[in-house]
Image (cartoon, rainbow, N blue to C red; front, side, top):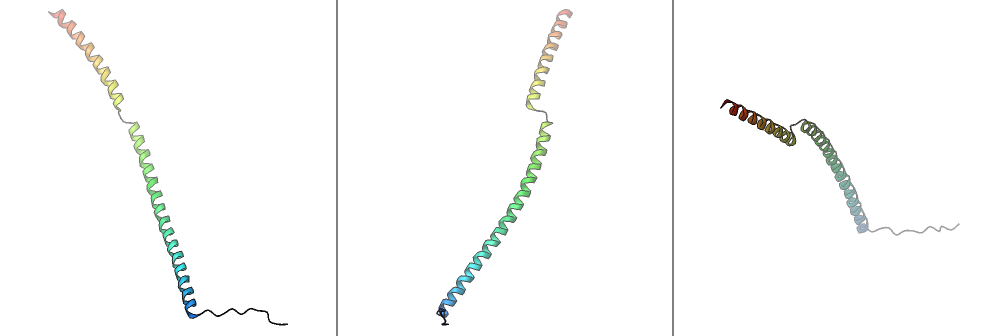
Length: 100
């Protein structure tokens, strides 16, 4: 049986060096991508922790502000006090008129 295998020409030294250089560049790019992704993952994890802390603080502040004396409540109280003061002034005038 005849040998039908095709002989591939041997690559020259320059071709082997270029292939090696390209292989090194590809491996370097893949490594750089992996390191970058790992760094971004760590940054995202840090941001998630900070966001959770901020959400907790906002929730706490909302609870505190719901217990606070609001400007609307102050306005209502001021209005009631004004009415009471007007009533007291009117009674005082009546007493002064009776005394005179």
